[in-house]
Amino acid sequence: MDIKDLVISLKTEDLYTFERRCKEFFYSNYEFSSIDQNNRDFIIDLLKKHRDDIVNFGGIPGYRLDNELYEIHGNLSSHGLSEMDYDNLKKVMQYFRG
Image (cartoon, rainbow, N blue to C red; front, side, top):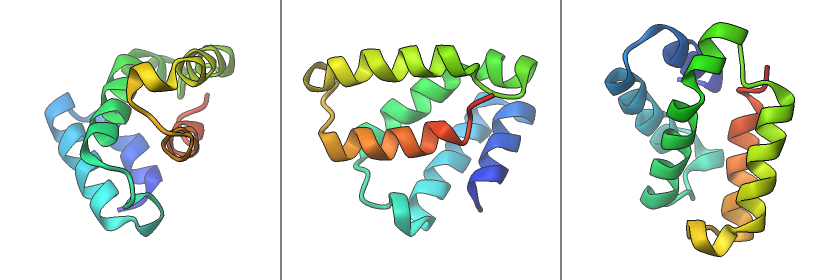
């Protein structure tokens, strides 16, 4: 499974199936395998939060994604993220940019 399959899954499948596919993606993709369970859940919740944008607009509008990432980066400790976690989050989220 690659990131494109994940994008399609979020657009077309129910949230339970999408969440399962996300977990499969994180386990099978070497680049993102260092992300711990709490951070995976954080990313999945963030994607589910923006599901309507992804379905309606084909992705998260750039300004909305930038604002979200800016807010998260400003509060890394309150989200329980390190700088490396944030970089991984940013990489994943860029695939969902509209």
